[in-house]
Image 1 (cartoon, rainbow, N blue to C red):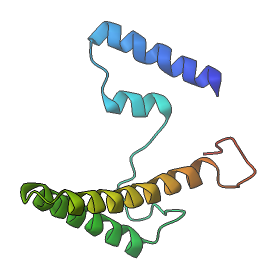
Image 2: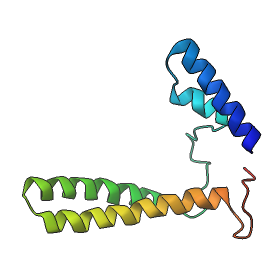
Image 3: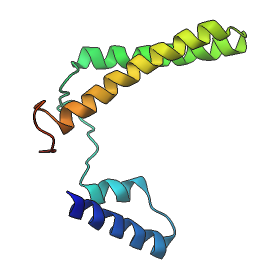
Image 4: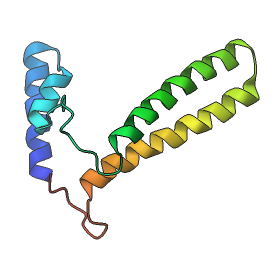
Length: 110
């Protein structure tokens, strides 16, 4: 894993030196990360319904936060920001489930 990261870092540095720009596509390619675009990609901790509800809740909370700030309601904005943190933790749990599918396992098999 360390050698792979060193290789990726060296490749990114080489491209940055040559092009002065490192795109996210380059980093994805070097890391072997493919963007999932179809509905066949399963989540480990979400159902599709949960994912769609999660997206709607994020948008609603962002709009509510903006209205609270514009209306100078700091307490309401603080509560909304806590809700957004909870939603962010759900995404973090999903990522961790992919990194360590077995609680006793500490290396990525994907």
